[in-house]
Each structure stands twice: as C-alpha cells, then as structure tokens.
Image 1 (cartoon, rainbow, N blue to C red):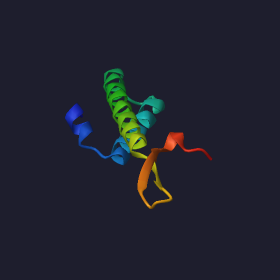
Image 2: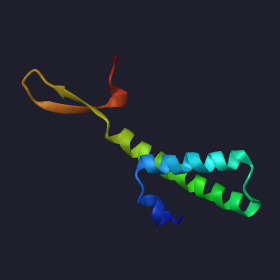
Image 3: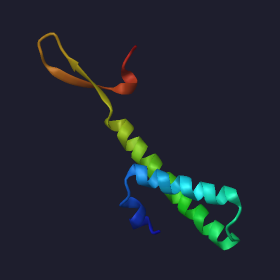
Image 4: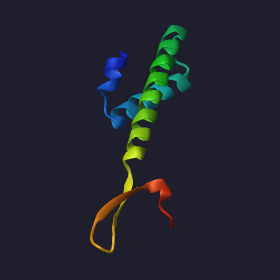
Length: 81
C-alpha cells in the first residue's frame, strides 16, 4: 500500500487496516520480511489517522449567539463548563 493509497482512505478504513495489521503482527505468524513491511504500513496508517483526528479537532467549535442575535464561534478547548 502506497502513501497515495493511504491518503485515499477514510479514517474508518485506515483504522480497520491498522487494526488488522496489529493483529497479524501480534499473532507472530508472518515472516520477518512481511512483518517489517506490515510495521512500516502500520506507522504510515497511524500517522494518517493522527492527522485526520488533529484536523477534526481543529474544526470543532462551540456556536454562541450573542444577546444582539449575532452568531459567533469559540474553539471547543476554550469553552468553560
């Protein structure tokens, strides 16, 4: 799987592939060369998933309506509970 193939995956597809690779590696039933290749794919998938999560986190905002009716947004991490 190339980097381009990974970038065409959805987050869920990438996570599924990553979980499959981890199970294969944990089983110990794959040859060393295949294990190294699988590990490299897993690293690329992990990086891709982390990037998707970071991008999603940056998009999450709290919508607020001011007393005069104007709508504004506030980053979620600055919301006080």
